[in-house]
Image (cartoon, rainbow, N blue to C red; front, side):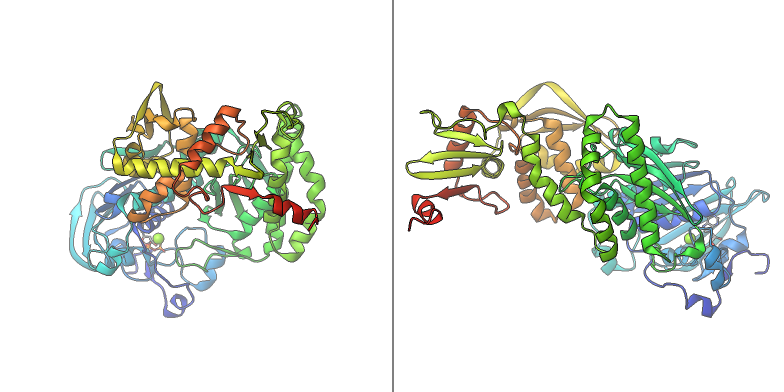
Length: 584
Ligand code: ADP
Ligand code: MG
């Protein structure tokens, strides 16, 4: 045991380490094993999974490896080479430190580890089942370690039952691997499921290119580098330009000393930097790498090490926010010709300087409130003056129907004034159409003259494979077209006027934010498709389009609300007007 760098932690140290479940799902196994490879100094890591990681997870690295004696030690609970005393935590430089991963994983799976060190001519292979070493034999391997985890939770049926669908577990694995891809740009990382390469980044690929591999090219193209340092903190990273936003928060990825963390403090900092630059439901992307002296943070607060505690939260928030704001200022002066950013930024600076003070003192993000104001103003700002419906006189004989604020249709029906929300109405129409058609297929498809190719990130593409059947049932024709790329050959005839790519991307983004059970998915998918392909606020409609919309609404079964329950129609009767004018 003395020649082993790996030792069992003393009882009193163990009791001070945040305990909890390390292995919740296949993605947590992948996370722990990649951490080990990185800690072993690997410059190349290959991950292969089968059946969403439940059947197999195999991770091979070219790190320093373990001696036969160390390997045997490594699988005991609380065996680690990274920590001896609790004080070591204050200067911990490795990702792991609890000595729990290998033992926990091996106790809920059938695990095989082969490891070899540089100088030894021979490696060794261990087979462990339910935490017990069953076989140990010499094995050939070049320097490094391969861990193979089979049949995860085979001996814990209750756990296995709670796993989500294969594609969901796989998506989670992709997300975990993506974080390492961003954090360790010098390491080659590969992820494969069965025969398919899901991710592959070579050594020394630039961070921005890696962001492209993870979040998509377009996102990376709209990000700008930022950095800042003071005596205590250092931050560098990439943030999205305020005009390029996402509908989800997936673009907000934070690392502290190389460790991917969820951090409310950091995401608050991002939102307050962008306060009022974003519309409601839109999110900025920010991939941030923070370096903080280990003494200023506590990494020992979460079993999966997904959270850290800052000694001074306010200080770090102000620091990060300031760094993003100065990046905007730089953008502004560099792109003085870029009116969009400028007007957004200009408008913002005045409106929120006083707000910032309040926000910090109340310790409460106020951006939500602020955003609402912005969104409410939006339709009026956006509306081109030449098509302004406010300015159109409406007293001519044929003005029995007109559009207001590019959002509402107003119709005089005998003595009543009817106001229809164009988006809600169209959503209802499409929802009923698709629901009906699904029952009475076949649905009418319209072949596209020019098939549309859609390139997705690995994560989106896993999701797409999950719902491709739903798309095709509604009359789309979507097919896999090579790695992470799909081709759309046809769309439901009723949607032939809409922009197919936007519709599909929006649906995927929405699906990604939530998870649905199989039963919910069908109806939810129809709702989403209806919502994402419906006419939007801001779309100009001509008289024919308005009349046809109202006609179709009238023949709906439940015309008065959209599928989410918001009203489609408001009716004002003369009695109401009398009341309002206090005639009565
Ligand atoms: P921890 O990472 O917290 O120390 P683990 O259970 O993950 O605990 O690993 C136990 C020990 O096994 C590590 O401290 C390390 O010395 C060794 N080890 C695990 N995986 C590898 C690997 N891929 N290459 C080299 N050594 C490893
Ligand atoms: Mg570990």
